Image (cartoon, rainbow, N blue to C red):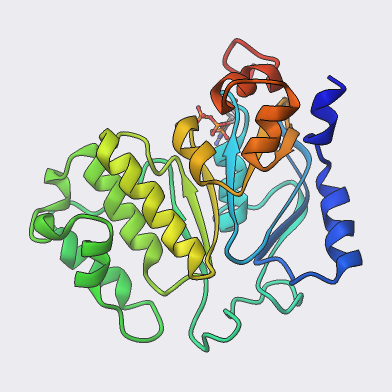
Length: 269
Ligand SMILES: Nc1ncnc2c1ncn2[C@@H]1O[C@H](COP(=O)(O)OP(=O)(O)OP(=O)(O)O)[C@@H](O)[C@H]1O
């Protein structure tokens, strides 16, 4: 795959490039993450660095470890090996957003967001808003994610797609500098998929670093600054979508994906 070599970049190479050019420090940086569930080696020395305002899409076959990696980035789980650092100071677990002065954390949308039954969508966000520094405009968040008309609906009466949008709303509380979104477009109708990716673009334009996983390769190709393809525990390609497509002379990212990943069966083997 000689042509593909231009697009297949090792994350270590990226880091050294960043250092040598003196570019801004990453908003989030994972270094040499390795993890196994029993004898299933899901990640093997994976590194990823995301700049403020950058949208990185994680793609890969089912079971390739995307959710596992995103959990590590969101720091809801700890890898067997490797480190995740957040913040611009380079001091490790620094959660401040430069220039914003407010509390900062990583906003995380899990693959299957869960909420406590019986509460309305608005009450649910108000509950989480208590834990954020500063005022949170729950109505604005509901409007932002397209749920304003469902504000008073009980969370257990929301559709699957609406539950995901509420999960996105929860991730936005606290004005995070980094958003980690696990399949945010899953279960959304085509209009909402477009809307979701528009929201992601707007957030990135305001300086938020976004890492998301998705099987919706059309919107990913249009929206992501970088696409990182995970397969067999490692990144097999990492670069702007146009470069990845060009590297394997494919028509689009969907076709290029088939060239980069080796497996036809579900991974995790
Ligand atoms: N808690 C766990 N215990 C044991 N195995 C796990 C656990 N979580 C994930 N795995 C295994 O790790 C592998 C990677 O799973 P992961 O959910 O990260 O993949 P994925 O790329 O997000 O898949 P999909 O695209 O289907 O969501 C799979 O083989 C899965 O079965």
